[in-house]
Image (cartoon, rainbow, N blue to C red; front, top):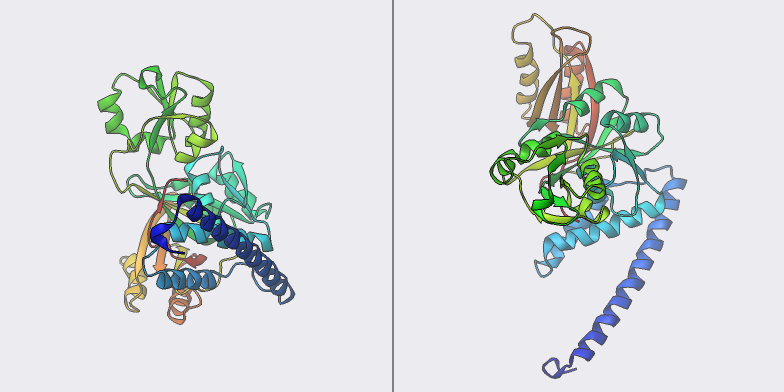
Length: 367
């Protein structure tokens, strides 16, 4: 067919043919995934293979050579891969609810649309459901690039027997929403305390006389706005669709680059992907000068990258602390295993809380 003489109906006909071929191939891919699931069950192997998934993304991006937009390509194949993986075994994911919180959005970004999502009232409840194996995974926020650590998540690792299975960085863009889309109708702005803090200057400048109302989640704020025409909410893009709200102003966060890191928790960490992170929980010898330096030297002497360190007080033990450490590498790596063995011998308390694929770049907070 001469491309210069093609008509719109002819091109549309070719698009229909391509779509039909894509659908046929997707159905074939799904059937292959189900077969692999049966073979893995027979061999008693884990359904999730992060190394294999990383290899797929790398091959596709390499072969694409930049022709198809890379972010869109990754998003399309992420949904395909997760849907096929979930065909092997349906995954239930607990998250901080209600619907349409940023944690819910992070879950959809990580597991795709096909997983079963269960809203919990608190981060502690998410950990509890995973610990009791009522769900396979939980999604929890652990730190924000502006507001810092989410302490309820860190504290929950002290209480529950769970492992970190993955992480996701979500670029956070806050939207002011309400029923009408008219800022004049808003008499109160509701949201979680962190988004309110992250939009403090915008609210002070543009809505100085409007009171704010902290609630336990952005999803709860969106639900309030859906039920009251005089309440505005600072909420996610998912909340706009879920609760049929109108956008008043997009992107009202005070600082660009606002990113929240989320953790996937489960009962068992995945095998090596080749680009991993390991998280540890440990205490130091008290009343001993240089105790923290000794721990850090175990890492530096082996050229292990320390990506995060955070301290939290131990409940019921005054002036005693646990330290959360994130280091580059997987527990299956010889050098990481050697380091952890030394820390286990050195520290009064030591716990490995997971090795998992590393998230190097933020996902866009839109759906």
